[in-house]
Length: 194
Image (tube, rainbow, N blue to C red):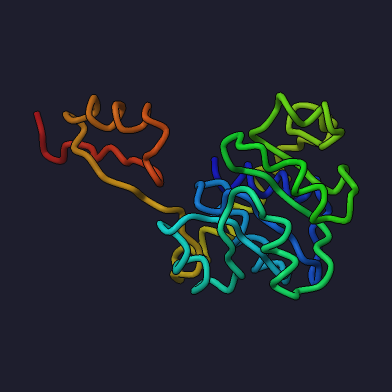
């Protein structure tokens, strides 16, 4: 889901090679996937993230800045030039106005999949107001073969926060419900159980 969600949103934004995109919330699974997709597509990526995934995102090739208040100033201080697009995957945190500032004051160059309450107020695009006719299955799932191959080569991943035996599903659920899992939680089937 992280791959298809990220891919769909980047296509809506019109991501292209040699463009600069800011992915807000690059430590989320959707954001982490979006960073990798954008880099594979030849874009320059600025990623906002906390300490958990900063080094991994840098190793992928993204320029990483901290999230939170003052983001526009931190991005400007990078000296990377014009940021053409912004994709917001972070939990709602008040960042949308700064993302609009970062892309030159044009709210239509910002797309969020998370801050659905604020987006309409400031004319930022959001998942549920994009043209549903453009949600073609081939577009959503057409990236899987390419990125499955990249994953097999060790060139694409989604963060995994933990693995649990199937019998421990309640523990995994409790962690998931905190909203602070910091990656996917995998339930492992019981092999050889009767």
